[in-house]
Amino acid sequence: MSGPAGLAALEEVIGSSGVAARIEALLPAGVRPRQLSVRVLLAGMCLTQAGGRPAHLTRVRQALVSLPDGDQRRLGVVTDWRAGPHLLTYRQVERTFGLVAAALAKDEPDGLPSDLLTAACDDLLEASIPEEHKNASTALAVDWTDMETFSRPPPKGTSDCADPEASWGHRKDSRLHRDDELFYGYYLSAAIMMPGEHGPPVPEYGRRITLSSCRCDPVPAFVPVLTALPAAGIALGDILADSGYAYRIPANWAVPLRAAGASLVQDLHPNDRGPHGTHHGAIISNGNLYCPQAPRALLELGPLARDVTREQAASHDTRTAELARYKLGRITADDADGYHRVMCPAVTGKIRCPLRPASMTLDRDRPEILTPPGDPPACCTQQTLTVPPDVLAKTAQKHDYPSAAHRRSYNRRTGAERIFATLKDPATSDTTRGWCRIMGLAPRMLFTTCLTITRNQRITAAWDRRQDDNARRAAAGLPPRTRRRRRKTLASLVTAPP
Image (cartoon, rainbow, N blue to C red; front, side, top):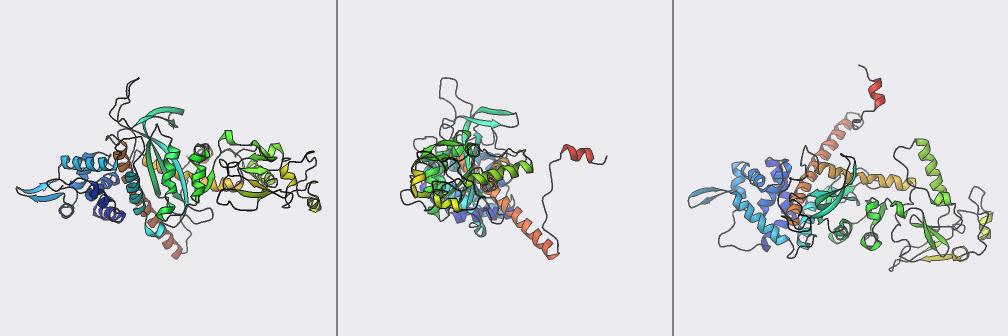
């Protein structure tokens, strides 16, 4: 990626995004034209990240002056001055980068990126995805991670430090077996393209990112980035998120995404699982309404643990399938105000109930309500029931929780973990403290966007090589190559030959 071929691909991304021209229009016009243009600066930043270098301006200049002589002349890295050829200096790189960062930053920083910065980063990332893959899938896995600033935290009782936009945040450190620890910096949120539930594999591109100060909640900070996708011509499909997103108040996460056309597939926080009140007698549980006589043991089913056996998983799936019979069936879609109507499961033929005489003629393989309520609520007497949008606004999602269908769909969310593992890999970028020593949200978000662009380029190259290899193997009558098993168990070590 650091050679001329990588430069050509990166120049194509920057040119097709149109970001460089928009930023140039924002910069002040000096007495003498700048030797370093915004387009070349962005190319140098991407070359730096493609080569595994830290996000330092000295490395940006080094990447540009290391190009072949023809590319240096073409890009203006070397120009003719009165005294002869002039090579780009660090001061010129610093000057152009400072102008770009100031133009994209907010006049009064509040810990969130400006609209100009967000639009520029979104367009750059979208341009890094090849045209043939843009509509391969509408599913996105989202998550956030820590990004520590190089600045030292302010002394206790003060707010004076080199990076005032940063703030104290919490992170989990699995390497040191700490559940929670403090760090000083920003939250990086990312949305990764994942395959559809029944669709073919797709390249796991980083489609959108944003950076926010730890004093701001990363969930509502990322919502405007996701809800802006339909306006850009990108349909929103499944949004895969963990319980850290699902636990937010609906107005900060679930409601705006549903309004934008997304289908939520998320893990529920332990405080949101199980029965939580009623609506006209129907039990509110795990994002659905259930019959008042639904067994309590079924309503309190939780997600499967990671170390369960195949028999335990089959038993769990059987019980969740039985619970689905007690669910009130939806008979209408949401109207313009978010209301929909549901119907008693006995009326829809899923259970037998004496309060619905017609259901007693159904086969006896269906669950039967033996002790119906003495004073039947509205859900047992009315033909249908209207459900306002605020009843299930927080926990409603695409599949019944925690069913087998939900588990299979939610398992795609691991793509969000893989992008952060790649960005923090010490063998490549290593975005730990010291990776970027420039202070401020705008400079760091620009460099992080360039890093994600180069990751997308590597994903494309690896995907193309894999497809070519599969095509050659298919022509030779061989099956596609499978991934090697990397994890070694104790059993395999014991049975291995000496």
